[in-house]
Image (tube, rainbow, N blue to C red; front, side, top):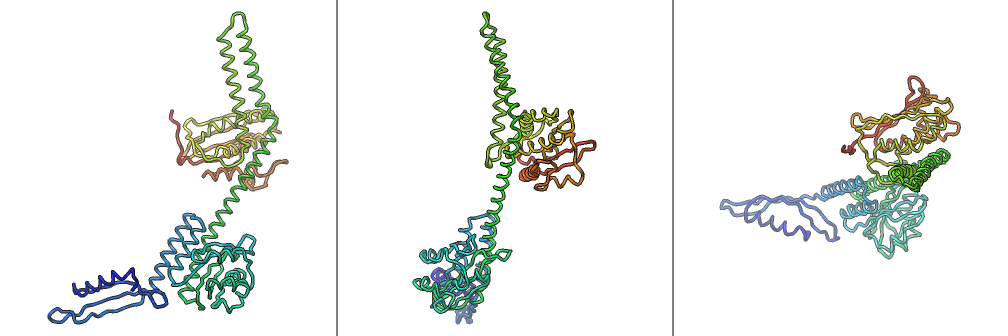
Length: 484
């Protein structure tokens, strides 16, 4: 009887003899080769007329396979939970290996990963294998005679080597395995949904042998779970690469746009600076009089502060647009953001005699968002409107509205430009589609992806008269209303 189960077995036996009751218990026994058997015992004491026990009738059933299946199911559930929580791949694979090893006496398991080059193996998990051995096979090439794992990945099919010292697949690697007593190794390739090899799951024993049906089932289960974990990690890495690529593209687009606005932005900055210089001179003039007029000087100084602050705000806005990287999301006042972008683009609109009108709701809540990304959306939409009107003569109008409806912010940017054809309302959001001679076709796709990343949606529609209107929503879940 297994040492851990012996006290419970003894207690049950005493109950049968002292309390004269039936008993039922599951326990383990240790076999001479070190293997474990799970037994289910049912015992019934038989008594004579005087109530003395004459014999105990019992039944022993081997429930090893059932217990193993239950343990594997429990282990499978635990591994799937780890995968769902996005636990580190190394930890997930190590736990998976331990779950399988615990079911068979003397079993040693390992996971190897196929390198991005598709040729070399990398260590994945092997908590019970000697470190020098795992170091020796790390980086080896896969091939038609590359041991069990390298061959399984090369063939993309299971490889069973019953005797490492005799099998030709291990000819070049026997001396690596021999010091550690490894004699059999069975490996199954871990395949992606596309059929490409991702790695392998291997079982080692220190005796020549072939896998039992139970071991084959456990190997298949482990390989399947390892595949899920690896593919999830690869998908997560790919999503991160795409996110970074989108962020880089958005940054380049911002840089290009800001470069095109250099003249207008320079004029926009020059205005408050020139006004500030005038205010400073006025202030000095009032103070240098024989009878200084402090009140007038104070008013001039106040205007000076206002103009310098305005110039500083413009420069801050430009600097923010040039910053690279993803800042943490923060509470953003959309109406304030709209006003900031109007300040930046007012000179560009004035170049083409375009007026900007706003109709902003007073009860708009703040939302959690990426301030720079949302600025970029407004810049793209407002510049598109200006672009659509600049060749139509004076009198163009750019109208920006905000409202709060059905627990979401609804923002619209409308123009009186050349408008959109019905079939273009969807095409304009396709990458590289553009109606501008010098356009890149990336501004609107980037804007839509930004809005969607904030949980909203962006669309366009032609106006009944002339021009077009772009609208987008931003959910107010978790929004913070300003206290009046």
